[in-house]
Amino acid sequence: MSSGLKNKLREIRVASNSMTQQQLATLVGVSRQTIISIESGRYSPSLELAIKISEALDYDLQQLFWLAKD
Amino acid sequence: MNKNQREASVQLIAIPISVVVFFILMWGEFSKPASDYEFVWPILWAIVASVIASILVTIGFAMIFPNRLENSIKDERDRRIHSLGKDYTMGFYVLGSVLALVFAMLELDYYWIALTVFMSASMANFAHSLVKLLMYRFGTFE
Image (cartoon, rainbow over all chains, first blue to last red; front, side, top):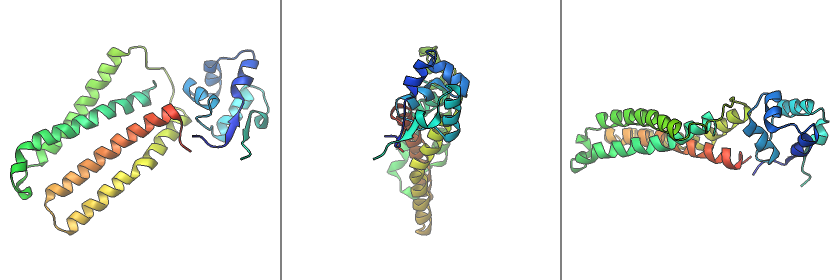
């Protein structure tokens, strides 16, 4: 349904002081539904948003988002 | 449901109402030859019906689901879905335009040209709203 971009956003977000989807959404300037869609793999964020998310979570971008090999 | 989803849902109801209003108003004309059809007012009333239906359905949604509208900002996903929705449904506009051009070249009655433009615009808007709602639910199909 979406592109080959995978992520472990939910895992990292929860590990990051149990940040809520709404808190992360507010930090990066998007809606909570967008965070939900990214976590469930239904939406691939732009590079700009991916960088904002990685900075908000203080986590390496390439560890957070990667392309599926197949 | 965010504002964009609500607007798309409203259009899914308002556009069929508009088309139904048009054909109800045209009903009496179909016994005449197409060249004698009085179609201008039915089309204008159909557009008015679409606007009124949009307003009423929006108010109805707000009354039935007062807390369902999330206070969300319009972000890159909304813009992407809107843009993709237009891309996916542009074919209706192109098809309608080409058909209207062909009908004009064939010098068909004005009614058929107007009907083609009206229906292609209605179907394009309906499909756009439907595709947007599907993308909000299932992803962007990319």
